[in-house]
Amino acid sequence: MRNADLVARDLKSVWHPCTQMKDHESLPLIPIKRGEGVWLEDFEGNRYIDAVSSWWVNLFGHANPRINSAIQEQIGQLEHVILAGFSHEPVVNLSERLIEVTPKGLNKCFYADNGSSAIEAALKMSYHYWKNHDKPGKKNFVNLSNSYHGETLGALALGDVALYKDTYQPLLMEVLTAPSPDAFNKEAGETDEAYALRQFEAMDKLLAEKHDEICAVVVEPLIQCAGGMRMHHPIYHTKLREACDRYGVHLIADEIAVGFGRTGTLFACEQSGITPDFMCLSKGLTAGYLPLSVVLTTDNVYNAFYDDYETLRAFLHSHSYTGNPIGCAVALATLDIFRDENVIANNRQLSRCMAESVAHLADHPNVGDIRQHGMTLAIEMVKDKASKTPFPWQERRGIKVYKHSLTRQALLRPLGNVLYFMPPYVITEEQIRHLAQVATEGIEIAVKD
Image (cartoon, rainbow, N blue to C red; front, side, top):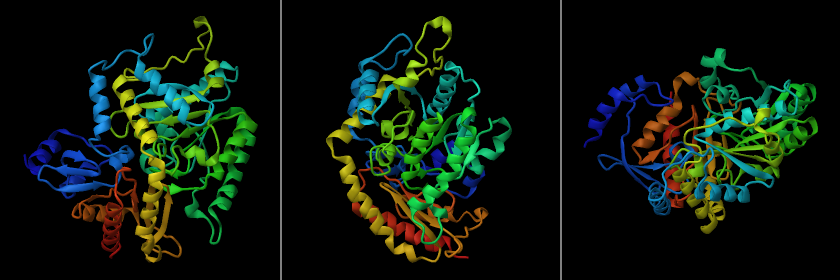
């Protein structure tokens, strides 16, 4: 089969996500036949380094032999079973392992299908917890400006990226928004930490004034991924944990994209030294293989629902594929790789290589910022460096980098005018340097008038 054959069939029948389909009248649609390691290969043998981990999910490469083996073994035993009234070994093993590796105190696991579903479950759990404690007036949630937590209606309401949210605003619940600690906006000479502490003052004021009506604060620790990979200092979440305790408000940590080593530690919350009341995980949980998500929470939250059936205090929330055994087997294989292959330590060297490979761009007149947490690095193109004035979004400069990358064996899908590397952890230093060269070339093409 030729690429063009599958593309023609695709465009007649498939509606692609996060895509203006008319773009494909001029923007190439790339049909992938197979993957191996960091590489994706189309039907004509062209190869692309998957620098974005296929939307941030792939940790250990495509067609990973160890994960493939885990799937094959589990399929031969049990493909799925209802998790209401029944259980199975993979879900028990996975729950025990997640409790072991996540911050201390997260002792119960509730499973769903994807990241948005995990956020929705956490929102409902938080509200229901307060209702069970005779505080039904606590029904509002707090987010951060420029945040993103998914695209189902509850999760979308918790976001603050206009591109995704504005169209559906009439359908969404109202939330309270505190200013982000995003270090891109700090003053000249101000440290990331000082800026985060300054921004926290508004959050503290909001909680002090309205805690009686607030269920929870929802945050994506360290990196606002869909918000242009904007980054902040971990001190913000240390202070936020203290304030949530002080005012009697839950803290929901959305680690769907930033968990499993993306920020330099297994979980981003570790860098703030905190345990949230709810931690939402997905994406890297199954290393890019299968949809699975989990909400980890505390005994305190769990016990608020534990009662006689007649009280109607139970959390009556479900998904058909909750705790799917094959997904759980993949997640266990993922955790085994972290345990056995010294992944976090190896990533530190890869992270240094990423930083060094793009350091030359720091003085580029159209690079407003280079930022990094662990295995996530972002380069923001701007019209004016001194003022950090952005290019008009309508000019779509980032797409020019994307188009160039496809001619140079790389998949660099931008977020607006932000280029980023979030590769599988099996990438080599040579491949990282290649991505940096491709990004450099792409920026030169993109910023031309």
